Amino acid sequence: MQNRNTNRSSKARVHWQHHIEAQAASGLTQSAYCREHQLNNKYFSLWKRKLRKAASDVQMIPMVVKTEAAAKKMPSDGSTNSGLLKLTFPTGVILEFAAPNESTFLSLRTHLAQLPC
Image 1 (cartoon, helix red, strand yellow):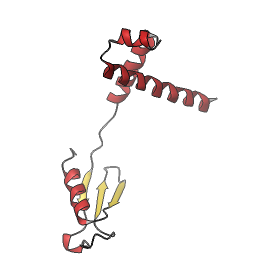
Image 2: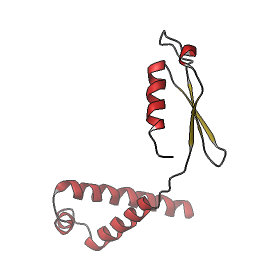
Image 3: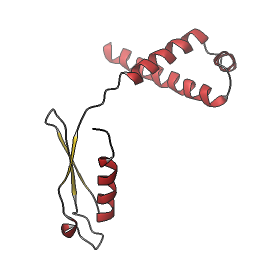
């Protein structure tokens, strides 16, 4: 029974997220959009608040970005087996990403270095 309720809730979330985004893009007021799409304005408002709150509940997790490969170790022929990007979280979880070539490695490293930690 729990699985069915979770599935129903997930479908409702997707349904309302779609309509909330479509209303924002439409240029219509919420009331006009709801009338046009035969939606209950009160449920629209309820889901809008609910989804906004869920989005604000997202928490940032600090991480340390380390790169473990010197450019001289990187293959210059465009082959794989190049640099390794390692993200270490305070919890001890480590994510490693292998870059397919030097330019991708450098691009990823640059983007990750700009993230707030």
